[in-house]
Length: 559
View: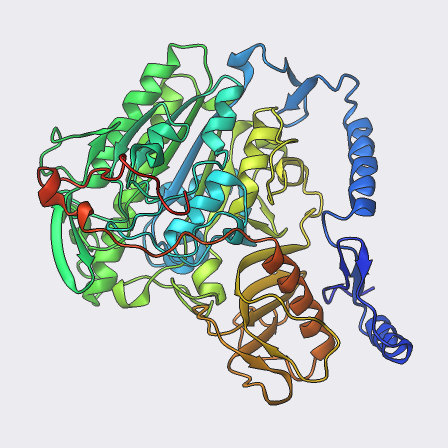
């Protein structure tokens, strides 16, 4: 049967009923085109089936003791839960900032990324991997294992904003600490800092070095921000919870690499497993890099923005090589899992290249959310050199790393992510059939009306089908069924049209309506987004010229 996509017409436990005549027509059409009708992930029947399948996979792997966790290429590395911490793999997550799809060598770029290319070749390339459209939501999904709509973060958090990632949500480092990990963040945070409870050292990280905000000058650490229409600047670089001035005008990527090497050396002599989140600022603006990397492209790239973007990216690649060398030097690589991805698509006006994908950072076309990603490790030797085409997103890393790599459990966490470790390791088909990117507006509308006025927006992928409802940047829009503007309702078959050039909304209305129902379901389960509220108290002049928490004397709305 052909794989044209999934049609989901079950919501929780209830079927969405159509008239018998319509059902007959839709079933016939589905059979003709080889479409599959499946219940959604999370229904009672599917949970039971999932448990049965898991038992089957356990038997296939020969797992006799459920208190034993197996990792590695043949599942032969064992350790008891809560014991033998040194056998748990070290986890290194390297997150690039605004790296485009065609900014890495293994995607055919003219930019030199030999280290990234070699590590991707040794590991598993994730060619169907998604971030969010901008940086703060991606980081929130990665930290919480939740869809953007259930993290409270739907936009870039500005320096003057009162809100932060809700403090009641359990984070990835917090969960890894339960299983004995030492956790460290090197690089940008960008999930809010208005009070100390929002800081990375209060959200599960044992140490932190970097800026609280989204970007700074790569040499001076100065940040330009706005309150209303006024622009101001301040210093934004911290060690744990205090400003740090130790690095002078040293380039940001070099600073982060030096700190990461220190942490690796330190923990090579300890028994605890290491989780290092290296959240680089490169190649985010401002387009700055050491002069050496500009000379590398002097006669090869003429466009100035592309030239500086390439210099930043190659510098980042060199830094990743140093991290890899440190892991080898201190005999940690054989028991390390390394992940690399970008936080969103690139920005062409600043030199990035997302071709052949359409779109860029800040919108929900493929170029804004489908990003370079891979996972590599000696523990994945069985899958070395493979390409995993299964659907996967940023929300999947928390259960994949906690359940799959660390051998822990997220059983009692309310996560949307799925543990993909066995799928990546063995090449089994992805357990994920849908991924929600965003949803908002008013979801209190009912199906069945002849004419609908739907004040809802969102983007979702189900199987090979992707629906963008509303403006591509997801500003709320009212949709009228009988007179809808095709530019505000976009339906694409990504298997046949990865560049999203042909809108199939009018010719595949049943598929559109099925995906619309899924958006409606997710709309009803979302968290309130952190309200946009700026505060004059955030001004660095009130804090010695430094961006610092300023609201510890009162509660934060939305946190």
